[in-house]
Structure formats: structure tokens, C-alpha cells
Image 1 (cartoon, rainbow, N blue to C red):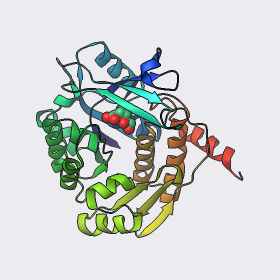
Image 2: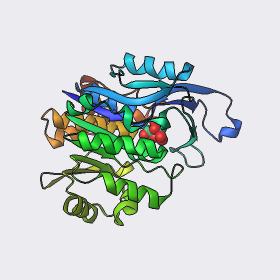
Image 3: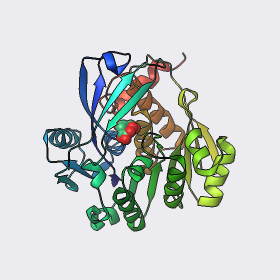
Amino acid sequence: MRVVALGEPLVQLNAVTPGPLRYVTHFERHVAGSELNFCVSILMTGVDCSLLARVGRDEFGRSILEYARARGVEVSSVKEDDAPTGVYFIQRHFPVPDRSEVFYYRRGSAGSRLSPEDVNEALIKGARLVHSTGITLAISDSAREAVERAFQLASNRSVDTNIRPKLWAPDKAREALRRVIGGLEFLFVDPVDSKIIIGESEPDAAVRKFTEEFSVQTVVFKMGERGARVYMDGKQVHGPTFRVRVEDPIGAGDALAGYFVGLVIQGKSVEEAIRYASAAATLVLTTRGDTEALPTLAEASKFLSSFEGT
Ligand code: KDG
């Protein structure tokens, strides 16, 4: 079984020390980007994943391709482009402890030049599911059109709304996301994004709108420290939460989405899928980098057993 994710892979420069970036002198390089993170996460559950994207023909582009390949991501549809690879920095634990803030250097990047002509029809048509996020819809008109083209061809679709206020205004986000969420198999959303898209942040009321007005099949409502609530097949299942020391929370949402979709499409129960996905997302909080701490299924089981009875 194969899924395809469309979006911009980025080089992440993560502050080694917490505090304001103006005083940080050491950064650690990682490879990230929401859809690449999704691919690595779903691969950990045993589902193959292809990334459809562009990277720069430069050292950072090479590092992304090498890392993606090393993690098992299929990259034959990743094009090299003359524009530079996008980069972002992460500031940690400042001004809010346990939170991170991102600073992008990606305008005009290779990844934002993704376009409908990059959409490999055979790959999309052969996929069990095609995944993307609000980030790809935000970075350029051509990237948004690539997602719309892929979604027209796909038999099943999944979206993580991931509205990044630094990338676009709420009214633009609302318009673009409303165009792609109709008939989704999976929608990942949080209360803030839900308010922007359908004017409702309360989960039960929001999910009613997503299912009745947009025919979304499964909604995963992400509520941060309060855990994730899944609405699927007419029932609600609440994912567990675990107390850990937070190093950098960026990437946890992608871990949750990849793990959850991977387990559900392989026939696991919604209860098991959200339990394991919550474990994977929690482990990502404990390290710098978005994908290094993604567990194998055996490691996720070990993590879950360690919390049993606590
Ligand atoms: O979800 C994690 C991503 O936000 C991070 O890897 C960077 O893709 C990224 C973005 O555009 O914010």
C-alpha cells in the first residue's frame, strides 16, 4: 500500500539552546517540512510513501533527498529546481516555555515552485491516499494548484489544516481550505484553524459542520495538551495524553497524522490507532528535529507500556 504526500521539504535550523534567537549561537540542522514528516511517520507504521515536491539544486536540497531516502521515502517525483531550498529557524522555550516559534526563509524557494505539471498522474492514481496541508496551499498559487490537481485525480484524500499565520491571512486560508476539504477521508484540525475555516472552534459543533456540509469522513480534532479526539463511523474516541519533558513541539502534529492514517488504512481499530499516534506525537516533543524520534511500532508499544497504570 502506498500513499503520496505533496508539500515543501525544508531544512530546519534548530536552536541548540533555549531563548531568543538573537542570542543563540549554535544551531542544529534537521530535515523537515510537514508533508515529508507525514511520510516518515506513516512509513514507521509499514505503509510506503512517495513525496511529490521540489528542492533546490544545492547542498540543502541534497541533504533533504539523502535524509528522505535514508528514512525510506520514495523521492523519484521530487524535482530539483534552480531556486534555493527553503530554510527555517526554530526558537525554543521563549517567550512561552515548552513552546517553539518558527522563522521562515522560504519566499521564492524551490519548494514553493511546485506546480500542477509536477503532479505525476500515474503515481497519484495508484495511491491509496493523497495527503497535503494548509502550508502547501499557502506557499504559492502554483503549489495550491498542484494540490487541487492531485486531489482531482486521487481516489482518497487527507488534509491537515496547519494554518500558519506567518504564511497567509485568515481569509485566504479559509477560502483555499474550503476548496479542498470536500469529501476528505481524513481531516486533521485544531480549534483555532476550525474557527477560521468554518467559524466554529467547539469540537462537536465543528465536526457536525465538517461532516454535514463538507462530507468529511473522519475528523481528528487536535487539542494540544488535552489530547486528540477522533470522530469516525459515528463514534468519538479520545486519545491519551502523556506527561513528558518538552524539548521542541514542532512536528508532533505530523507524527500524529501519519501514524493515525497509517494504522487506520491497515485496518487497525480507531482506539488503537489514536493510542499509538498519540504516543508517536508525544515522543516527537522530547527531541529537537521533527522525525528523528518517531518510534517503530515496537518502540511505541514500549512507550505505552511504560505509562500503563501511571
Ligand atoms: O509541522 C511541522 C512543520 O511546521 C515544520 O516542519 C515546518 O513545514 C513546516 C512549515 O511550513 O511550517
